[in-house]
Image 1 (cartoon, rainbow, N blue to C red):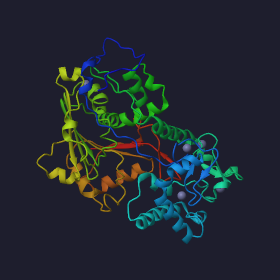
Image 2 (image 1 turned 120 degrees about the vertical axis):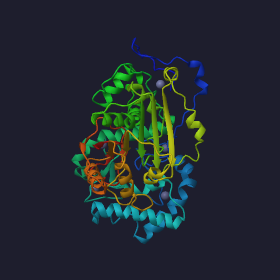
Image 3 (image 1 turned 90 degrees about the horizontal axis):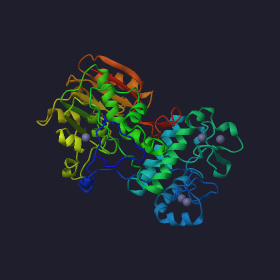
Image 4 (image 1 turned 60 degrees about the vertical axis):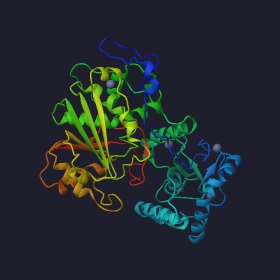
Length: 456
Ligand SMILES: [Zn+2]
Ligand SMILES: [Zn+2]
Ligand SMILES: [Zn+2]
Ligand SMILES: [Zn+2]
Ligand SMILES: [Zn+2]
């Protein structure tokens, strides 16, 4: 747990606060450093928004704020640039110069195809930011236009993230209004991370003593847990905090909705877990779950997923994540179990399987049949999960996906499921925006755990 509170934090008598500053050096935390992100409308090197474009004149897909930044990126950009030029030549000048004739779906396929083609030509997988060069290019946002000639384009004055034809202001779609703020925040987060590195909001240290009613949404919980924190005034830190808190709070909210009270030992299975999300800032499970559920003495988290990989992470480091002093005094503990590179249905058969009180699927996309490594393994996983006869929580990035996920769960389960909560907005969703590629035209920005449903 973090050992200091932000300036101005008040305490009351019912709070129990962490005081062991002397033990700070012993605490070990596991955190991800942010990866480089490509923004077509910002300098590739310093990420500042572009006013005077200095483009890579060869591929015209990457821009810089000045000559010096262009030169400093030359070596890193060379590989992809030559491949883009080669493809552009075959397509008659620019890789996306046919895009205006395509439907949304076809344009999406063209970009994925271009990505695959580039990887084949380079004989290596593209890095994440290289993929973004091809997936999120600077083109006019109007689907009937998709102008690619860079000198004809300009950006929304407010977010500077969405491009349209300067000569046709109506090409900036009216629906952009509702996403503009999210685009702006997205850019601000990338810029901040570029300059200052990872954003690390201080986790709350308040511990609830009596039986406690969960406030109705994530803002109220955060207000309650911090009272008066500087983290709440910084937009970037706040959005990051909601991204950290959403998994434990959504799990708790869902479980409460099932009309159950947590037991002394409480086990949650996190199916299809990603270390970068459910496993990032692991002490969030103490701060946003254990500390607000006084009934629990031992919280057990089992992370299971084929993409889960803790090879670079010594298991003993995880086991050394220290509980706060109050928890240590009361022998309260969060235990982590990482079932790496495994399917849930395989874990179900294993001797080490432990019966869960709650199963969570965070943003799994159950309706998609592409699954893992193009094998659809969801049917087996769904049977294994519904076999546990406990509440199951499933979240989704979009309103569109959530009912499809529910239908898939019901179809694959070997027994009728009781729907505790139909697909609905999650009041504990993350407020940190991310770009959407899959259904970009409907929801260009997405949020973790945006929608959810519960079954039993
Ligand atoms: Zn720059
Ligand atoms: Zn280039
Ligand atoms: Zn246009
Ligand atoms: Zn805008
Ligand atoms: Zn604690």
